[in-house]
Image (tube, rainbow, N blue to C red; front, side):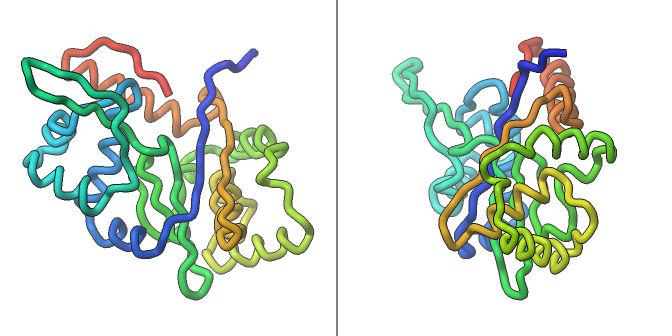
Length: 223
């Protein structure tokens, strides 16, 4: 079978101060997650995002402009009946943000998966079957960011162990471990996975379609 529907997962190191601002604030987490899900197909206005969240427009603006500035960007602007509308998207779609804390503790912000916390609490790959994990690991094995020296491999294994992920790692473990390992060098990681092989992406697509049907929209969702 020829797989043409792909999705790029990015992972990058995040400044601890910014990370903690999100980890300690449930509303900011909800905003980041809803922004990812609502813009899978197309950009969204800030007013539409506020309505989808069920919060006030001014409350959303405060969070976006003061606490979450680096997580979104304006995709396009339009004029409507004399008013100026900004359509926004995540600044880096489908990105997993990684922070290395005290005691080699890895913290992860995965807005699309609505997962915010320690790596030891789990990642988006954990619900997949073992066969799916093996398939994705094999698919991503040739990615440049997985080319480690023997010493780097040992350091990464120690990181996994310190974060209660000692078993055979999942693809997301590898992505997160890559960024944590190379964080001091400022390197990022980008891996392409195929939706036909990814349980998580298929679930997100199905959920988005269901929500749009219930709201009266029949537009297809693409990642």
